[in-house]
Amino acid sequence: MNASTEALPVVVIGAGPIGLAAAARLVERDIEPLVLEAGPAAATAVRQWSHVRLFSTWSEVVDPAAEKLLAPTGWSRPEGAAYPSGGDWADRYLQPLADALGAGRVRYHCTVTGVSRAGRDRIVDADREDQPFVVHLTGADGSEERIFARAVIDASGTWSTPGPAGGSGLSALGERAAADRISYRIPDLKDPAVRARYAGKRTAVIGSGASAFTALAHLADLARADGGAGTHATWILRRGISGSTFGGGEADELPARGALGLAAKAAVDDGYADAVTGFRTDAVQRDGDGRLVLVGEDGRRLDPVDEVIVLTGLRPDLTFLGELRLALDERLQAPVGLAPLIDPNQHSCGTVYPHGVRELSHPEKDVYFVGMKSYGRAPTFLAMTGYEQVRSVAAHLAGDREAAERVELTLPETGVCGGAGLFDQPEAAEAAGGGCCAAPATLTIGAPAPTSGGCGA
Image (cartoon, rainbow, N blue to C red; front, side, top):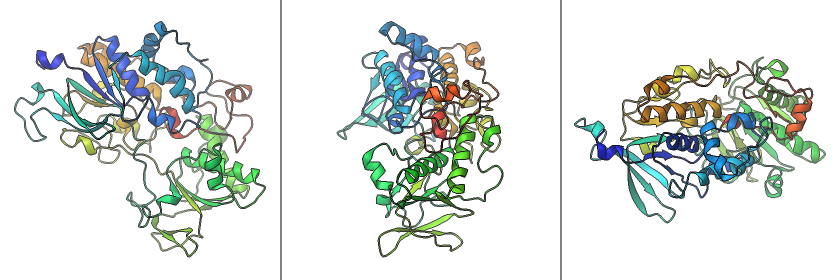
């Protein structure tokens, strides 16, 4: 890197929890950050699941460097043992952090459309690492701009690219045409308009993770509230039901996750939902009344439903990074050095080994995926892990090799994602035993619950 390049800012893509923590760490190292956020405010994605409570406590979702930056502003840290909702996280911590970074360091309404080396496309080797990065972006009015950077930290997450209903990983035939009746998010049934959309209706929920469990729990609560006036769910799983389908229940190392699994099981057992197993959606069709009929790859046709909620995971958006030389795992689309550590077939969020710049590096020097983006399609991400990632990356960019390679985070063996579970209020969780590892004493099916993204989405 030449002197003129070193004087450029480090561009951070995304003003979410990990992007803002990256900026705070860079400031701590006297490196100038420039955070580019596509939305109108900090934590735009988090605000879209503002009704969902996190698995983790406040003490686990506030970055130490960010807290130091906030302290002179008069910011008061929330009670460490309490569990924030997504809205709490955004309003009480993330937006104040973005404001504390100072004028000009966070820019909103900036959508990154491309990243490359200045004057060097993907195939050019000559003097490649001496060239700054060029970042193309568009504003809210469609105007185009380019910015030069010494390094790029992509913390754009995966929220904007949910998985489709189709079992092949592609949209099912007719899925796009039925978009008016398909949602890819957990519904906020406290919102009267959303509640009216699902009340008295038959809804298909596609997915087998914590997000699907949460949606089923919410719909079961709605069915109970309407006294059996027609609200019913059809739970569609691509695999069969086994002992592991619902997680570990009361023995789960993550109590909140276990409670969600029990809620999904209870929704079926209590008649609020029917389970359809081994069903991979091939097509979405409309019947004569405009309702949706899901057709499986094996030819099965399910009974018509009014709405479909697709919760089949998230994936990274790589479309604007095509001119960079990235090394991504062929299955997870995560950095190849990180992928074996986060394989969801082997790890939950509490068993992922802390990692840093070594595992996050690509053939393209000084490009890093952090946060959910670094996990690709794996759902096991924790905010605490992301904070450790950006601490290491910032140390590396500052030339502090020893600090970059040092692990400064120790994750508890169990329960780090645990917490509020299905309890609406943090006090209820504390009354049930408190702490990150205490199993809930009771199971309330209908109370709001966090998604897997709540671990640090």
